[in-house]
Image (cartoon, rainbow, N blue to C red; front, top):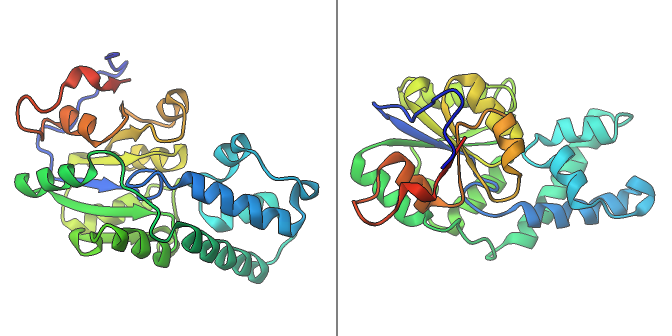
Length: 244
């Protein structure tokens, strides 16, 4: 385990855990990549050549659709961007239906959250239909005390507003929250809000998540449980957690 330069530790009076959804609860980025590859070829982007994973991670992953469209189709008006986004998200739902498995240890970790009486929210840049569909896939939509959608806030991630909205909805202090994120955009939002941010290593590099503000990195929810000491003694080892 690598010590944090800032000596950051999870809040001692932990009140809530705020989860991103895509790439954080589920390893869904590969499905988003396939959907974007297909629809961008149809639009003739990049000369009709499929985008690669590096372009996806740098330009698309974790970002709001209208910001993605602004960057790759700057000449489009709002109506065309919205139509593109709706088509892409329907494609994602079709591709992912019944095929998204939760990150290892998630369901057990949710049980530990309940045992400890913590509040919980899902905070995502995904459209509401996507978020609800993914959460319904593991029968956990109603488990969250709040579901915050970036498009329904004045500003989406990487702005801190969605996480501040979530903390207010839960009636907790943001400084007493842990944010779990997999993208630089989301990690930046959580850090700017003032939360302790844990990066889930499902897709991005440790360097990218650290640079975005993550105070610790984990590979799955067993490691997160060890970091937060929510697991019963002996079931997880904190040595397996990479803290930065």
